[in-house]
Image (cartoon, rainbow, N blue to C red; front, side, top):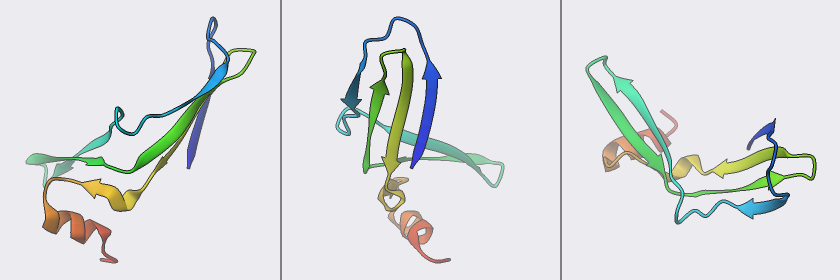
Length: 82
């Protein structure tokens, strides 16, 4: 779990759930310095909280096992102990 905090003026205090249906966690990595492999994680959740003093924080949970690079063999290899 990762948490980030910052202070921003003029934010409304409250807590909002990150909607996994309308949110995407993605990545891009170089493969053999020739191409890029892009992927997403399909199981994400979290919350955004703004306190009364304007301090904002985000907490996110990403299931690494939900990786999807659009290549089933590669995804299975990434999930393996190898």
